[in-house]
Image 1 (spheres, rainbow, N blue to C red):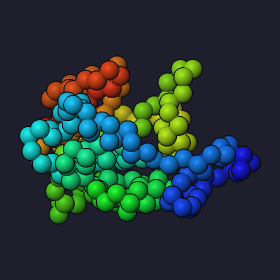
Image 2: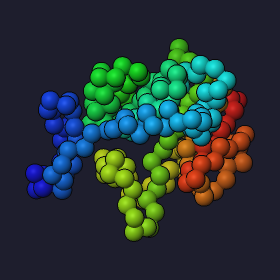
Image 3: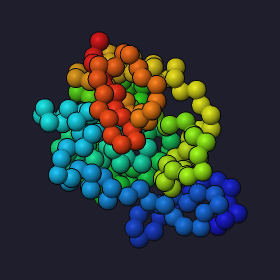
Image 4: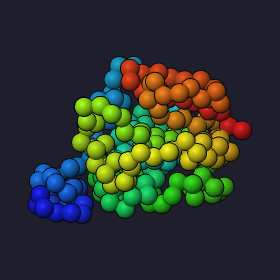
Length: 207
């Protein structure tokens, strides 16, 4: 298995799993972290940023990845649509959704969903891939795999993210929420921020 050069999906008795080049063990998106976050005694920073305490929220998770944040929001009572454009990741999410049935998983470009005026969300949630940092400590295995699958090396995501925020502000009914590293540069266009220990959520109001 270690000589494999392309990522593949493996189906076994537990469902679909990901096998990446250079690894001999399968990777499955885990929902245990999402359950712990949503069952905590106080509302998480994610929930606060999305305005969960203000009532039921319909949320478009536009950069779903392996779905931890989307599942957390679903556990908090939100109606969540997760969009993923990487085929392998989408297949893993769809398999997970068929087992849990708490979210809707869509394949495609999130901008197509945000431009479709027939769709209506209270919150557009953007969790873009963070640029890599020069640190000795590696991110968790799931994030490493996502980075490898997306081909992210040294991206200039500023323009793309700016465009996504602008598009989200035109279609969101309540707010756009962007997940960033805590020490990332401040964006003066955001209305307010919810800060955690290592990340923050920048909140933008509709145009």
